[in-house]
Length: 364
Image 1 (cartoon, one colour):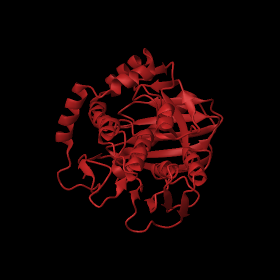
Image 2: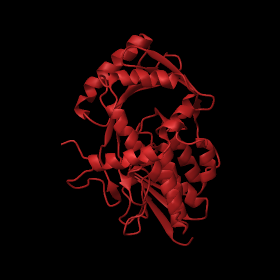
Image 3: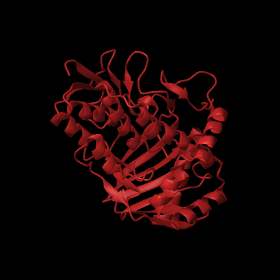
Image 4: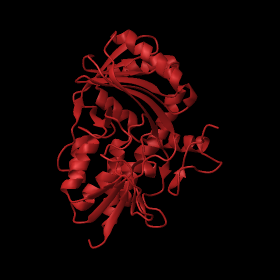
């Protein structure tokens, strides 16, 4: 390929697009406003979900063109806490998710950065991309969901715990992950965002009661926000490609967007090399996203007693199978999604940019 491809944004989706292009002979330059990689993340735990399709996430990455697996920890169990003090252990035969770190070191970001440099990608850090970049990988534009996180070192044994209680975290959930002494505590919500500080205090008290006075050292506070809208394409009218959250691509149920972002990187790389696959875009990006709109509506409508039932049911089945069945875009789920999108549609002007075909009304 003769001309150079310019990518604005050196996060997950931008670097992934660059790697896939460079390995197929393209000249690629990536502009990252931050130095050292890692974007807006500070080393906390996130997940590469493995419960939306039968195909394993690592097998999918290899199929997309990522030859070496990322630094992940497969997870087979977790502890769910219900609103009434119940503890429910969920388990799966195969990993229901892979835990990864996001940030500048020992992370999904550093894994991609190393591959980009090895493939000959030019990284330009500490400045903005020139106007007219070929790929926009600039991350979320507006806050459709927010998480407050505390990242710390701890003596807590390996722990994966999630609290489902709308009285603690309305429209969201709280989590405590600790692996090899590295811990992340957070509360995530998509509505009632002004209540997040109070939700954080309530959730922290629950985890302290459940797990005792574990050490909390080298604290780092972080806030994350999620961008979600349904895009008509990854390509705008000026020929620019959008990937990851710049394209609105995110799971609206739990906010787990890493796997979807990597899919958009592969689609955009193929398109830039003349191989756009509309069918794959609809099958692997749009349909799963639409299903999560319906599931998000059910999530927010579930009362406290319903969460106790959810935790019990999840603990009595293979958890990965349970997640796959839950998120399958069945006809009933697609019909509910269409209804919810009519009810929730933003009608006062979109805040998300040129690709948006649907977004939820903002809280005003």
